[in-house]
Image (cartoon, rainbow, N blue to C red; front, side, top):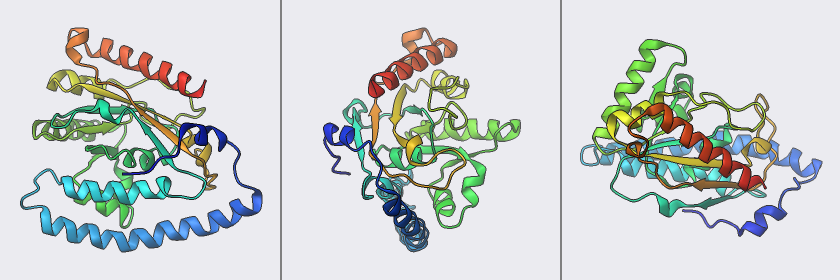
Length: 261
């Protein structure tokens, strides 16, 4: 869905724009995001009303939402998204996607991949005007962290999504990494994979922490790389979710190091 720059272009763009350019960039970017979201929500609502009766998985709405969300990074000046390994995800199968989590910009980077899935996201995001309302229309899956009834509801909804042929997307670290390195994974995504026979697809993101740091509202645009790794079948580790978690964590940690190296 995007026309990513060459990898040497990504490497060459490590230096951020100057201070004046960054100031103007931030003064324009946030109003554009808010105003465009207010407009695009109504297009999303119209698409939902036109398709929900026959598009039971809401694939068309998710595609529109992906273009909407992804363009804030993929089409932004001084930024862009390079997606590698998209061909590793075959069509017509439900997966559990797991990704490292460095920044709120990760969401835009994942949207730019064009992958088909249902987000698992903290419940607070669903209350945000326009963007959160679109998440509700898409039937993305809310989670109240640390709240057992919400975790159980999330798990049931994920299993229902997988049963109908929809993939789910989870950040197994649970929160953004404070230093950009891979944190320990919670078990939920891997239990979900084992119980439903849905392969894990690791997704590794690099560069988003430099764009928007944790607790900051200052944008420093730069290109981002997203690498989609081959699926990992839970049967390959004997259906043991702890072994599956360890294997996937090791793969993603090694890949993140290779991308940075």
